[in-house]
Image: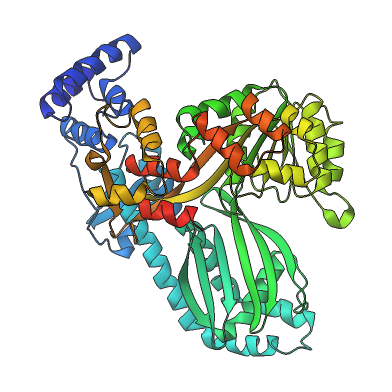
Length: 584
């Protein structure tokens, strides 16, 4: 099913999907690089992957299907397991006597077709479709899972009740609690809870006992959503099951406990960090989901651009010094650090980390988990790390004077140090270090770049366009330097040179079947502060965070709210979302 390049070019040229000038430029480049003209046009953003697939389907004579508004029978859908469907972008949508129609993004994926054929023992009829179409069908797996979850609860409530009432007693033995945790209904409920959270892309699971019920909530894209209400009788059994998984004390209900366990699903390893806190109505459980393998991220994909991206790359090229990332818990600091480590991770360097906890596992990186209960603190670990001949050191978090002092010392003695601080802005990191008793002359000698970040939700592909009124522009100008943002947009060729705010399209979220609230996924908004000679002078004079920020802005730094508006003008997020996150 290989398409002749000449045939593809003729169809693309005649389709009217791209201008004649763009097609001719792409054709010339394709000849020079010996690539397909389709790949060049997609790479330059002149043609979408879905439009290219439509052309390919037409050339090959393969039917093209759009499944976005189709409800597929669960019996047909489940013929292909959800992990296979998600990994290979292949879904079953229609079954007839002796054959099964499957929608795919790549009809040349013979391994996937062969797997499905062997599994269902039917003739496979491949059809081409779009990315959005596949996504909408994958969501139907989740809806079916929710129905399955409800059925489990309904069927097992009575079975849970007898165990749970026993578990509420103070003097229940550990062996009885263990028996409760291994009871089949409890195991099925917890497994389904975890599987559903992974499928939904949740970052946290909250299990909260109320007076008359047990509330389960998932944090998705930074927002908590009610996922399920369970019978109050399930509380003790679920708590016991999660304690068994995390290797915690089953009979301890008065003190907080912390633990960890791993789950492998669909070829993906997910680590769950468990925190249990006694509250008035029982034990509240919060589980943080951590996808253990991380690769393929780029700083551009995380949302860095322009001068900020250049300053970050310059800082990473240094052999010594510090790069600090700041922001509240859950703002993506660790992902940013790991992305930088992934870029720096070459065979020529030795990278060592000290973390609490180790959130992602990376090849060729020596990662150490702190264990304060046995004396392995950030400080103690860092002392040992510098004797391990590292080129690059990553300290999960600078929390105290000792860790700050050791990190600065490591940066002074020939190491590149990456770490995080809890401050609200990039400029705020300097007073924080001074507060940790780090001398100003040491800060100016070591700190290369400081960045601050937050995460905003990204708009789905379906969104409503609108334009700012003069009144809206005037209102925004009270809190944002619009001229600076517009200059950055023009400099990076996001908008034309003669663009004005009233002519730039913005977007509102649009609710669809695929995107419940119009958002899906998150991206960072940043401020990147290079420690220039002018800022060094301010630090030596004990300048305030406000003075340092003003100096940074003179050098071209966009503050977070300005970077947020920049991304709104790109159509990535909304003004309301940026204001919500920055004002939190």
